Image 1 (cartoon, helix red, strand yellow):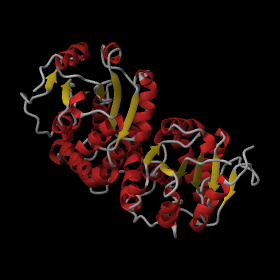
Image 2: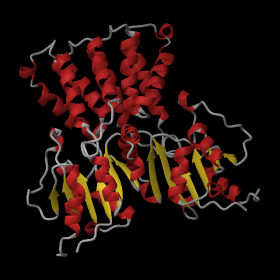
Image 3: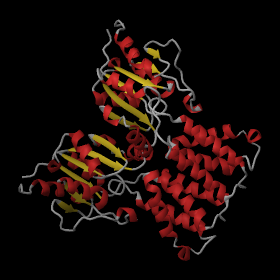
Image 4: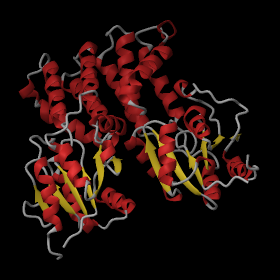
Length: 240
Length: 240
């Protein structure tokens, strides 16, 4: 039987809502730009995504980088016609996104508590350190976790480092998250277990992944109420 | 005799140059604004500092927050007259600052190696996770450190957490850094040792501190060549 010593949880869109606030920010951004250009003609969504992708390796993930990318996109698509007042509104969108409330997803506290009763649990969340720490504090979940890791990228190298520090083999680790790209693929790649809990929206840059629907060691749950059972199913799996 | 088990090092302006690049960014920023306002009349330096101070609790430390604060200041001091083209130049200042080369301070590699020969060493650096990780990688010093901590704030609570994780008492810990506020004061406050290595420039918000020049357990060195001797002096201190 597989023995899971540590269970990892993603933060954004796994413990609490996040992408909805980014979507709202993008809608507010487009409402400002709509005064200057035809949004469909300008291919606004695609242009913002391209600027974000280009900036990712300089800015990293998070709201401040998104805000700077929105400003660049606004200047670019308006041919530098946008007013300073409207650019200030774009900065205010970023500020509001950084201060959004932290809404736990339904049933998540109960699910985390049930899993923590039998396992060590670690929060592994990606993005801006300052904003993630603020969200962790506001979530009220911090005390449930035995360890918290804010990381700049969720790839195999990052998970390998975290597992080394936790002193656990991949076969004894299961990761819960909404992103196949960031939470599941690298953990499966190392030989660990993935519990995918899809969220109703996914950022385009997170939607790129190479996980097969029938990948071994991958379990899928509909919502938080299925998480504890998924861990139990993993532990009932006969050793390969 | 005092026994120092762990020696901590700050990153920015202790291991590598940083504030110089921020000063350059501010000079470039003022050069753009000089086309709109009389810089002295506008009290540009003071206004930027006020915007940064107000934004610190929302943006945290780092270049992306500085860039957003510069954009806000530019819009504010020009009464929204600044052009989108010039605001884009301000974003480019931020991008250039994020990509500045990592220049080690004179003698620092040698000093770190000498101290690492007899002690465990930890890098404790504050700011943007993504940018700090990039600088650590480029510094070529990462492999010398037994542990690396990027933190969002350097106060007593942060150092207390790090020392707990290192399993060391404050009396067995010495922190090397250029900032009395961030590197020295909280460590002395916990009962640890401080080795202050002043840098030739200090950000105004880091210059606010309450450390007396003759504080107990505080040692001051002129440059990296004095660091190993300072640790040795601490270890030669009779127990209180």
